[in-house]
Length: 150
Ligand SMILES: O=P(O)(O)OC[C@H]1O[C@@H](O)[C@H](O)[C@@H]1O
Image 1 (spheres, helix red, strand yellow):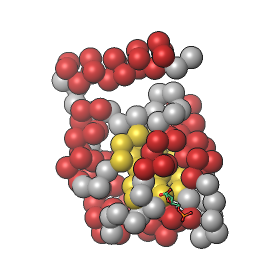
Image 2 (tube, helix red, strand yellow):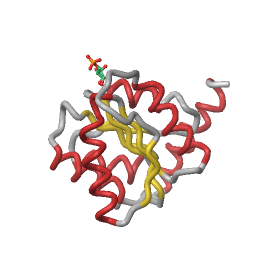
Image 3 (cartoon, rainbow, N blue to C red):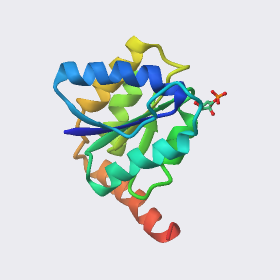
C-alpha cells in the first residue's frame, strides 16, 4: 500500500503527524507537497495527490487543508477519485465500506491530531463492502463521470 499525501500550509503540521504515524506503521507514502508553512494554494497539491491515485501510482490518498473542504473539492475533480472529507472515525469507516472512497480529506483546523490519526487509521484499515448494493452505487458514480465529465 502506498499513500499519496497532499496539503497546503494549513494542513502541513497535521501532515507531518500523519507521516510519523505512517512510518511507525511501516506504510509507504509519497508526499506531493507542500513542504513548508508558507502560504500556498491547495488545488495544486490536491491535484498532484489525486492524479497519483487515479493513475494507480498510489493506492489511496490523504489530503489536508485548514477546513478540508477546498482540498476535497479539488481532489474530487479528478476522474476516478472519490475523496471523503471526514471529521469522525465512523464516517471514515463507512465511506470505505459504502463508497469505496479512495482518498481521505482532513481539516487540520477542525479535528485535533489524535482524532485525525484515528480517522486515518479507520480509513486505511477498512475494506470496501462487497455488498451488491454498494458496488452498484459506486458503479453508478463512475457511469455518471463517464456521461457528464468528458
Ligand atoms: O490560510 P489562509 O490562506 O487564510 O486560508 C486557507 C485555508 O482556508 C481554506 O480555504 C482552506 O482550508 C485553506 O487551508
